[in-house]
Length: 292
Image: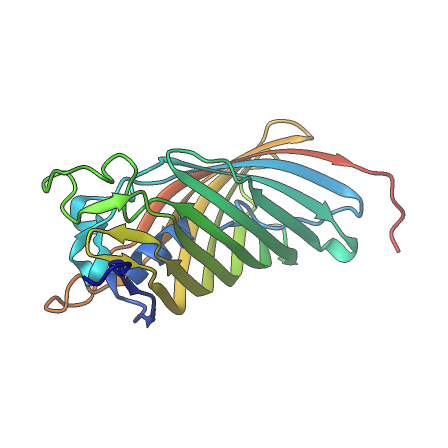
């Protein structure tokens, strides 16, 4: 090597436009679905000036070894089992003509190496009501990112052990997943159990615009690849709401979204969907406002 010369690190920094059923795409839409802000109930007639402050909690299922093998088109295990609970703060504001708007925020609090930055917004209204049924529509969307050392976890980066650190990560990665989507939800509640208990179900369709910015350093190259994908998903919920008092309400639901994936270039397309449980604790009050 000539005097003063320095070794140059090879850098991967292209954009990879992925099919929506590739393993990396499946992981992105799986965790985007985990963060999806469902209605957790059917829109009700609202009073202008009413406010509901909510705490939402959801279970994040643990992924198997096969499910975690999503890197490099399904050939590399990624550290995706970081947290088992997802939380969000929500506030719902009553608008005129029975419309309501909900703002959801996932605070950027780091837990086990993962930091979410998510903003959700929805506009909802009941569209049909009778003695037996109530139907509602909800338009919603999300903008945000989830940051973490998914590709090269901190606890193995730099270790000179091919069994523990098989990819020879030199330092913790600084990866960022983008989980943006819009969706439309139709929900229904049979009026069969009085004022306190309300069973409900919903169906929704979602357009997802997803990405993953890799920021990893290996022994022989740096990976700065940007993975992007987009497509449609569908989801359904079945749940039960309970009005503990005039102001306090508790809801719980089962959420399911079928998610297609092709695990390897030689395998066929299969469904590996998300099934999880979600809860909502809501406290309502009203400001003295005059409807316009």
